[in-house]
Length: 46
Image 1 (tube, rainbow, N blue to C red):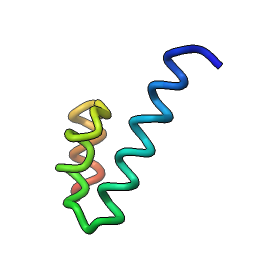
Image 2 (cartoon, rainbow, N blue to C red; image 1 turned 90 degrees about the horizontal axis):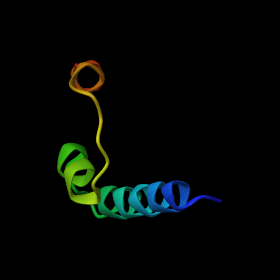
Image 3 (cartoon, one colour; image 1 turned 135 degrees about the horizontal axis):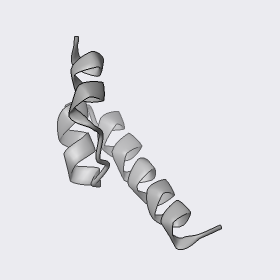
């Protein structure tokens, strides 16, 4: 596994941990450092 893949897995783990603690999904995304393009974000929020 490359360093990029390992970093992504770590970010996803942090994200799911925050969501399990009833953290707001958008807050969890920004805290875990996962970057989602704005267009995709708008689709997810609707």
